[in-house]
Image 1 (cartoon, rainbow over the protein chains, first blue to last red):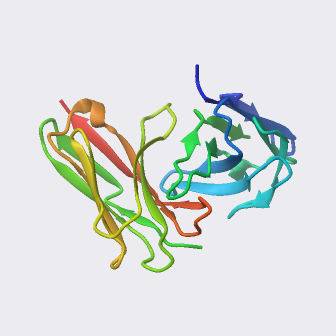
Image 2 (tube, helix red, strand yellow; image 1 turned 180 degrees about the horizontal axis):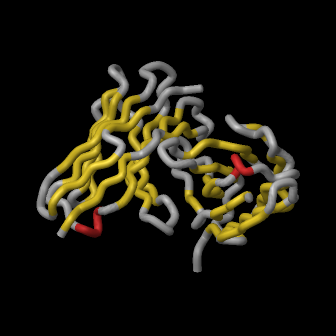
Image 3 (cartoon, chains in turn green, blue; image 1 turned 45 degrees about the vertical axis):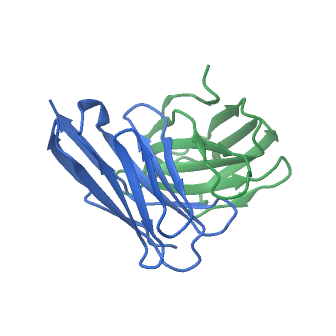
Amino acid sequence: DADVTQTPRNRITKTGKRIMLECSQTKGHDRMYWYRQDPGLGLRLIYYSFDVKDINKGEISDGYSVSRQAQAKFSLSLESAIPNQTALYFCATSDPTGVGETQYFGPGTRLLVL
Amino acid sequence: ILNVEQSPQSLHVQEGDSTNFTCSFPSSNFYALHWYRWETAKSPEALFVMTLNGDEKKKGRISATLNTKEGYSYLYIKGSQPEDSATYLCAFDYNAGNMLTFGGGTRLMVKP
């Protein structure tokens, strides 16, 4: 079973709709992240959370919000989707172990906003 | 916004060829440099984490080197195989808090 899961895997929505992408993990990690991937741009950080009561904006948080419902769950919401939010979205987790923490990624959610 | 660049953007090689690609990153406030391998329709998977200038890491036919003073890392693949086809991502960790800035990736395609 996958340690980091994302639902849905694919989503098509219309401009102006509110949608939520969900991430769950069984790794027991405190730290969770949301990234978006656009062709040629690598992964860009949207939001991150270092524990249940901690939420921080990343590089490109405008138009997004998040909720950390529990250690294992971190949801990303698009309040009013727009076409330039069409992208591949990844959730990731990590555990602070000292030097150079590896991040573990989910399978991604492909979002198309019409 | 930190500038992390990877070159080339894409690379086509024949099976058996050896290849390498580059990740450039800021030489100040260095904490760690990560390499990930990302196959289409799968999750990015960690290959290496390097923290010290001069670090060399190896996993099978894949190896990586690190130069923090000049701000670059090389990833080498010896004797490329079709299953090596993937996008290789590097990520610069500057904050000691696991805040990663990713490069745009190098997409490798290995032809049988």
